Length: 137
Image (cartoon, rainbow, N blue to C red; front, side):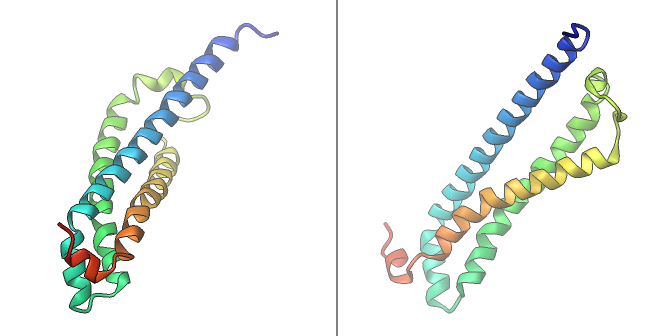
């Protein structure tokens, strides 16, 4: 058993666990906010659909709001990541602290996850019946 590799392996696994936990919390938060905003706009969605908006228009409307949140969070996250790279430098093996492929890979992963978290409430909102939505509250 190699004792020299145990500590870095444990630290990397711990860091990965916290990163995954943070990702799950971010997805739940984005889903909750997008779902809340879509619910708050139920009457507006009903009016739009009654005036001729298609389901695709409603999907774009709700998805656009979620994507705005994702872009804002992504930009803040990139700035924070660039600031923290020197602290995490000891955890990096085989790549530099400012490796562009690592940043691009993480951004693409986060965009896909955020898109999934946003599309679920958007699909629910697009299936709202106009008559039911107009009677809402």
